Image (tube, rainbow over all chains, first blue to last red; front, side):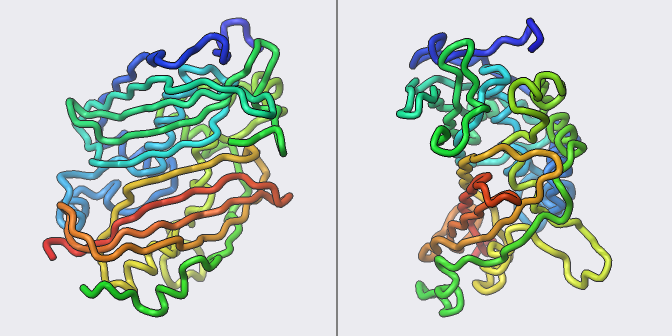
Length: 161
Length: 170
């Protein structure tokens, strides 16, 4: 693997660690690109008139699967490519619209090794716009327990997300 | 709106419906498009050497799991627009709730999805709430699970969606 790639291990993190925030200025292109990338053709993600007059929202808004992609990117920016997502749970309390600056933040809630020897980080993440926490997210991501370990090699009984 | 659910909707709870296969084999074009949409530079998805070393070859980002089952917007011979998560749209129709949003999404990931894979899925309605009123309108919440397996029958993932179907200003 390229020498510049850094992978976190469970030994290098602990509960309470904070992830560096990620800020991103959302445009209509962000929303539409996310909808098309997820094959989501529903009009509230590309047609402002529909979003306003049918959905009652102020504009088109980021769709659910694209939010999942954003959370995955935020997590693996931090873990490195050996980070393997096991479970992600998110609650959308409001929407993300063009013109918003969305900010992702995260904190390690716990670190553990399961009975199969797989290392896990459990994290609490938020997507906020201004002071408004738009989406709350819980994520469970496998990390190597050592520099030699690789969660992607796990399958069957060795993978229990 | 009465508390009681139509019998047909009651009968859907716990039932495996809409067993489907992907309309096309998994391909990297959509992987790159997805990564580009969120500026995900993870070399696992862009660098074949890294992919070979870590995961035995190219894979798709796990969060793309539902992407593979969204039908084409149009296809030859199709007389009605196919909908992803059809149970969600069935509920909207049967409960006469014209608008809907998703509020919660939980995804548990199994084996990685690889280019060339062909996936299968089914949808299971888990619950429908009593009538509720939110700032969007009056309606009901529902929970739908979507289970995904690959061509070898290996569990690829399970998604659980909570949706809120509603009438505005009702």
